[in-house]
Image 1 (tube, rainbow, N blue to C red):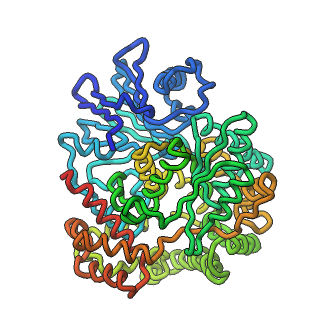
Image 2 (image 1 turned 30 degrees about the horizontal axis):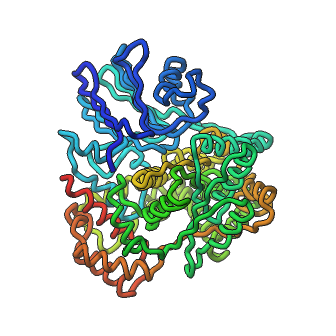
Image 3 (image 1 turned 90 degrees about the vertical axis):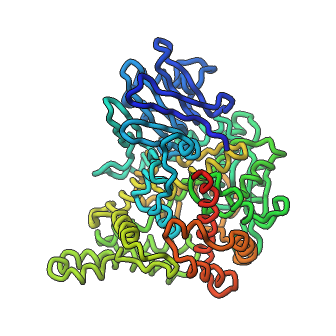
Length: 602
């Protein structure tokens, strides 16, 4: 994929240098009217154009200039949309940059105290003179183990390249770089909003979907779940009211996997009278399967892609609607806003709200696949009694018997897979330390762990990795992505709604269920959440072909984090149906393919 833009400034030089693709409609550049040496460069899109005094034909960069003059340090709090942007203020010889609150547009940079280079493209930065291409071994090892500690918020897979986290700005003035969060809906000491205020979520949800439609959203990646179906219903209401073309649903079917929602998707589309394209996971793209297609495209993203169908989905998105669609909404974010994390169980247990804890267990067991016993084990043991025992051990025994405290610690050192290269003790000690630093520091206060979880949503490395990788995959096929549930105003309220409101009537995501019962009564949606699996037969058949083509593991061995012989045995055992570890097998394939895609840059 062609780089979109690049900002470079040697701090001993008078002015920075910029490059950008003038034919890219997502890129906007504008110089300050009163000082042509000052400028704004933005990638992405802004909402609420009617709030700006500038004419309707004004570019997004011109709108940023308008707001910068008015709001200055509060600029990023006032903007609504998805963007990465840089402002060069020549009068103050100052760089100001920022990223939207959920990081929907990537933002990476190189900084060595003398030079700053910024771009939304990892590849563009790696091509700059003086930028080292060395991989970040710790991050790649954590990816291999499926771990996303908080330290990854500012890291990339490359040692010298950093990421600006979502909801953060960056400023360089007087030779100093300062970065800070500009928005936090869950500040220390926050209070849940009152019940009347919580009911306003529906108005903000409508506003969020309206913003996406006004920005050109023409399609929706629709599963059979509550989140994306809610967007479909709201978008249909908005389009009918304004006499616009209906949104086009793009869906996926997984027959014979136990996770097929094709009938529900078709029923929703029929009830709303909207067009729908349903693709099947086993459809071929030319002569390639879904898995081989994903491995071929994996080098497009800034990090290894674990979603086996993401690249293949992008191909079907391009073909949907006879290839006339280009801006898709997603249901991503519904879980983060309306689903209650397990950390609430810890808060309930420590505050002795045991009846509410039992209600949470009931609601959870009706939503998540699996047995009631599995649900109880998660809620009562892993997230209630075990943290309690750990806390007691820390307070009563830790001072005199450190070994007991360590034994009961929830995050005691894990057992790594046999195929890791554990000879590098410094590497694995670092991974252990980072893992423990991710854990909540306090328990006992009502809402403390749940509040910390909600606060971390804004810069969750796992969410960032998903959104950034998806951004590049779909740009590669000409698509832009919209996330109504990640609308700043909707999040600002929804993250502060009392979790009790989300399990009313013993059902998870009660607000969305009530909305759909009122506005889509003819379709019965499943109570259980669906997880889309990577079928074993596909991974064993196509994965084995890819592994043979690779000639085994090479790049992972070069960076010294695995034992080649043991890892090859692990992969061969899976392909020969001797174990069921398809998650690990796919991650190994994906990371090896990604490393090979980036190795030529060295």
